[in-house]
Every structure is written in C-alpha cells, then in structure tokens.
Length: 583
Ligand code: ATP
Ligand code: MG
Image (cartoon, rainbow, N blue to C red; front, side):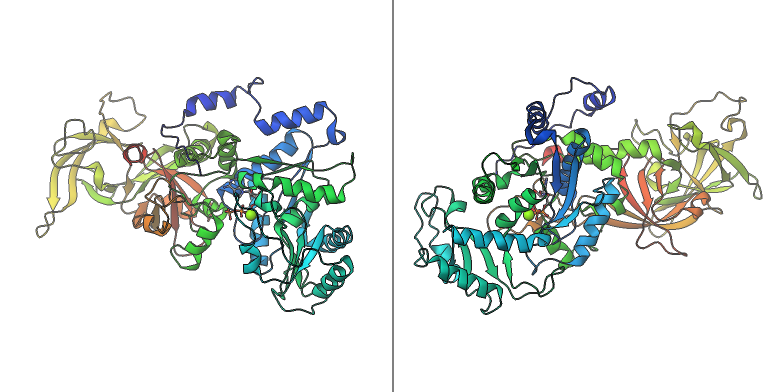
C-alpha cells in the first residue's frame, strides 16, 4: 500500500470556516462530480441509488462509518435512495449478532433505509438461475479439481494460467453436475462452478473465477436450503443490478475486480439496458489505529480488550461507549473527504471532531481525579456555602447550578508543587490561586506523610472578600483551580483511555511482525475520583466536561445503581501532538 502520512496537525480552523460558511463553491468530491455529470446526461433516468453492503462477520468500525456517510450522504444530497444490504454469502463466518449490531450502529449514526433492507441471500434463487444460463451459454463449467490445484493453475500476473481439464465439459454434463451440487449429492469442496473467461488474462480475477462452492453449512437466513454458496464477486454486481443501484461505491482494493463485475453484468444485461457501475475510493486508515475486522476480531476473541464495544476500539459501538456522538463521527467523515489514493488520516482529527461537538453540548462539572486534601483553616468548621456555578459558557440556556463549598476541599494533586518552576501558576507554598466559583486561597503549610515524604494535605487560608461574583475585591491571581467539597463529594470510578497502539501505522507492520506487539500497555488507567454532588443524578450515556480535564461520559456497561463509572472520551487538549511528531 502506498501510504502517505499527514504529519501536520490538520488545519482545522480553515476547514471549520469552509463548513460554516456553507460555501457553494466548495468543490465536489470525485464521486459527486461523476454523479452530477450523470444527472446532467439523464443517465439512469436521473436516479441516484446507492447501497451500503456490509458483510455480517464483525461489528462496524470507523472505516465503515465513512462508507455509510458517503453512501447515505450521496443519496440524501441528490434526492436519491440508499439501501442497506447484507452481503451474507459466507455462512461459516456470519452471525445474527453481527446483523443486529450493524443495524443498530447505522441507525445510531442517523441514517435510514426505510423498507429497503436486503440480503444477498434474498437473491440466491436468482443467482442460481443466472448460473444455469451461464452454463447453457457455454460460459461456466463444473471443475472437479481440488481448490489447491485450481489455485496453482491460476499462474501469476506475468505467467498465464493452466486450463482445467474440465474446461470443455459438455453443457449437459455441466448442467447435470451443477444441479446435483445444489441437491447436496457431493461433499464439501468436491466440485466448484467456474466462469469460463480467459486463463491468460493479465487480470487474475478473469482467470476462470469460482462462482459457487459446496458448503454443507446452515445459513443464518436460508437455513439448510442451500449447500452451494455464491462467491462475493458473483453475488455483488448482480445484487446491485437487482436492486437497480446506479452508483456502486466500494474501496480501492476492488478496482481490480471491476472488469469481472462488468463481465458478469455483460452476461445478464442486454445492450442499452440499465446497469450499475462500480466506483472505488480510498479506504479510511487512521494513525495509531487498527481498522480491519479480522484484526479487531482477534483482539476481541483473545481478550486483549473488553469486547467489540471496548471504548478503546475503533468500532462504532466502542466509539459510542467512549462518548462519541453521531454528529462528531459524521463531521469527521465529511472532513476526511473522499480520496482516490490510500492515505493515513491523523487520529487527532477524529478527536478534534468529538471535542468540538462536546464543547457545545456538554455541561461543565467539577471532578478531582487525583485528590489532594486542602483544609481552609480560617473557614468556619460548620459552614457550608452554595456557590453559583455556570453549566455551559457556550450555551447560556443551560443555566447555573449550586456547588457546596466548605472548610475541607479536594484539589488535583498536580495542581500543587512544592518547588515550582517560574511559569507554574497553580498552588505552591505561599502562593495564591482562585478556586473556581469560590474564593482565593493561599497555601500556608504543607503536610507530609512522615514515612514517605508524600504531600498529603495543604493548610490554606481564604480571603472572604474574594468570593466569586462579589464586587468587594478586585484582587487578581493567575491560576484558577477546580475543586470539590470533601464532605459533599461523591466517589466514582474514572477510566482514562489512551490510544490502543503506540505505533503510528499499526495496520502496516513488517512481514512476519505481529501488530499486537504495538499494543499500548498504558491504554487504560482506572482511578477513583471525587466528583461534585450534582453528578449523583448522572445516568448511563450522559456526557460532561470535567473542568480543565476533558470530556467524560457515564459508562453504559459497568455503571450500576451503586457505582458510577465514567469513561474519558478525550482530554481537553491533544496531549499527543508533541509526542506523535517525534515518532
Ligand atoms: P475489513 O477490511 O475491515 O474486514 P470489509 O471491507 O471486509 O472490512 P465489509 O463488511 O465488506 O468489510 O464492508 C462494507 C463496506 O464498507 C464495503 O463497501 C467496504 O468497502 C467499506 N469499508 C470497509 N472498510 C472501510 C474503510 N476502512 N474505509 C472506508 N470504507 C470501508
Ligand atoms: Mg469485505
């Protein structure tokens, strides 16, 4: 694969502006350009009809999301239709669980196929009929050779293949054998049906490709009706044809299959009649991310992560559990655009998209992840004040809430340094900071654990004149910290996720290397945090900005009546920007 890595941080500001200004001159992607040309020429009676064709052999991932946004997005833009079609031609790998998850994920992303939910298996009868036609036309034959021999005979791109000794079998014999294959008279693998095209073609896919193989396996929809199953290539274009798809969009690796796609259609579509066309675009690759169902399945199966919906997974269900919104994923897909060449997109762009969306929609709250006790020695022991806290400075309609303030509060451990460098504007001995929405405090004394020397408490004083919002004092300090009142705080488990891989291109390892070598051993850190009491009403799926820390959501899997679990969606800033440049 020809991979070029986008090294620089994406120029988000510029892109945002382009999106916001709704610039009509914004150039079309190459598929839109094709569609507009087709519409101009009244091709396909001016219809635009696309489809998203997942194979139900795994959960959808962010790469699929791009394809979904493209296919459904084009249909929407051009007043057309987009079908959902399961490409369920291989019963050994496919499961109902995957079908259900795929339906759920596409709906969640915000797309709808009305009543156009199809399965390639709906067309097994028709495909079988067309195979009989091919045989009668002398364009297909039953081959009795084992599959290893068939693949050996395929040759190489520069060396022609060897013709099968069964290639010139009489039509009647082919028909008889194929019907008997279908009737279950032969065991798995004994015979196959092949198209008779060209064993010397420079395109290997045209060297008499297999159309059907024998598999005595139950199918999730057709049960035991069939024991022969069509190959992907034989099913795909014909399914497009049946559904009257106009633009059959797939990823680049299928470019080389296109002549075969067209050859099959040539056999069943009359000259001048409607026919679908295949277009290829570059699949999405993301830095620090593996996007391949086979590899993701391996991580799930071998227990490297907590299932398909582990928040570190690039699966749609993982991203959802992580706190990504459908809008953020759709915006990401739009920004990435539609390329003709393979490339690797910086995962920071995905993280930027969710940050941007959550900034608008999530309320701010205070949570202290690594608590350090602060006793405010001149604050009355029995006093509690209710401080006014703003819920979302980006959205005034979200209003305010009350935050209790009392003599003992927690601040973040790393907001204190005993011996700070010059530019450290947080708390240090003798220094002052503001506790947000409360008072300015001054650090008077540092209490340490006598055995370890660790700082375990700060004794501070507060200035009663500096209450937030009051006009008594115009005292200014450089640092403002978040905090929670110790007596009022609630405990929660907080899961800090980091990238699952430490390598920029884990999908692209050397021959013989295992991609799992590059798993990030520190991709999950679990903490017990102290949260402001308003969060006791948080429900699974709720999203918040923890002030100064990042975006978090209530975990939908592990949260119970008695235990709140938060997932970190993203930190407030891209902490990897510096590191990834040096990799
Ligand atoms: P994988 O390579 O992860 O196993 P796949 O291509 O086998 O994926 P399918 O279920 O066949 O998975 O894919 C359904 C559709 O999604 C296809 O049209 C495919 O081209 C598209 N698709 C899959 N991966 C990506 C990706 N990374 N970027 C864009 N589109 C993708
Ligand atoms: Mg596929």
